[in-house]
Amino acid sequence: MAQLTSRFDDALKFAHDIHRSQSRKGSGAPYIGHLLGVASIVLDDGGSEDEAIGALLHDAAEDHGGRPRLDEIRGRYGDAVARIVEDCTDSWETPKRPWADRKRDYVEHARTLPAASLRVSAADKVHNAYAILRDLRNSGERVWERFNAPADDVIAYYEDLVRSFRQAGGSKLVEELERIVKGIQREMGY
Image (tube, rainbow, N blue to C red; front, side, top):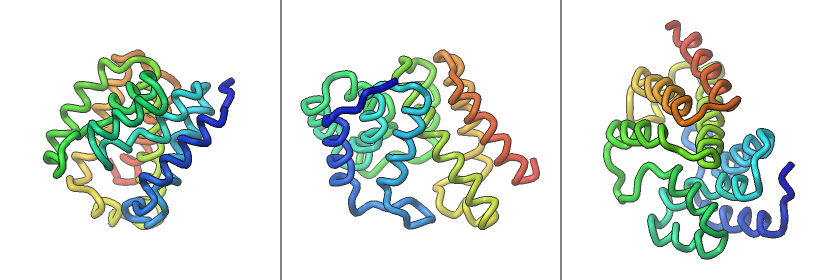
């Protein structure tokens, strides 16, 4: 069981400060809710404090500052957390490269993730895919309007991630992701 220290509290405040003006696509909910959800999934899966901090900060470099932000994370929380954040980042550029290119490259990268990064990335994808499934059930196919890709491409991306995560070692979270993706496919009538 992970023992959370004041270092986790500091990371939570840091994540909140970084993402304070950001909201979740479609729902308008504060983005920190997603980060807390991912951290909760990581901890429920037996993750360490470093992994939980990585979960809180997994989008910090991608969304707010690139490599300089990653260097700041490394200085504050150490190499293990920085590695997780780096492994979860699919874009270092602003503006970001096209969605399909980034996702294709991330699927390839996911095959090589070490265990800690795999846990955080899979937890992120579980949280995201569940949000899609929930919103699909509640709002119908309008959910796909928030993506820069058609529904079939988004679903294929998640299917490809499941395969890549398995190649990296798999886990209970990967199996959960596959179940959620199958739920999305059922809702879409596949």
